[in-house]
Image (cartoon, rainbow, N blue to C red; front, side, top):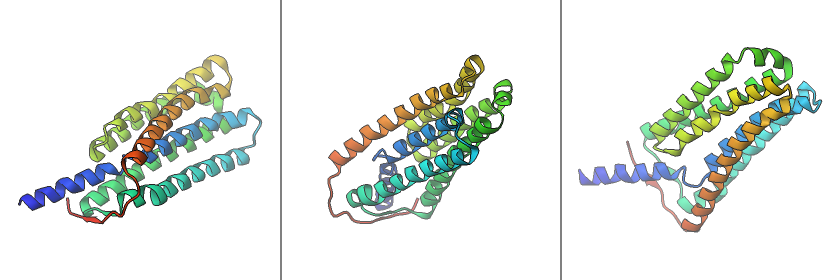
Length: 215
């Protein structure tokens, strides 16, 4: 019985360590910065096609950087962790929800920025729907993943959309919409960078084993 409890606690700590390296923080922050580029590019006379291409390229590069960091930096230090089926499913579902939520934001802002910015400014209801769903999605992620800072990230993701539309409505300049995205995105990237540096210091490269457990 004691061995079972210890194994579950060990798996829980290993599960939380997935987010200790700061890579998720930096990745989510860069995605937010990418969303902010949506209204800026058309303001610089960038065509719809090139706007989509640029945003897609930046998003792919951010994902590749995240993947490379996990594979070549985190794994050699933490080892390969194999979670039980329930916890593994929970992690995969949470990742999917976070990614789809961020992708939805990118798509929404591309459409707003390139097709009908005036309509978006007059009817900001989708912006507030986005804000609510960002808080809910990140709140669920924080709860299920036991990562408390994700609660704050929900707020950081929620704020830029309504604030950006207020700036657009009062100034008429779409480029200013990048400001709230930039602030929130940079905050998340900086937090991730601090965690990443701390992770490198605390976990030098060593031969790590494999953890197997069930939750």
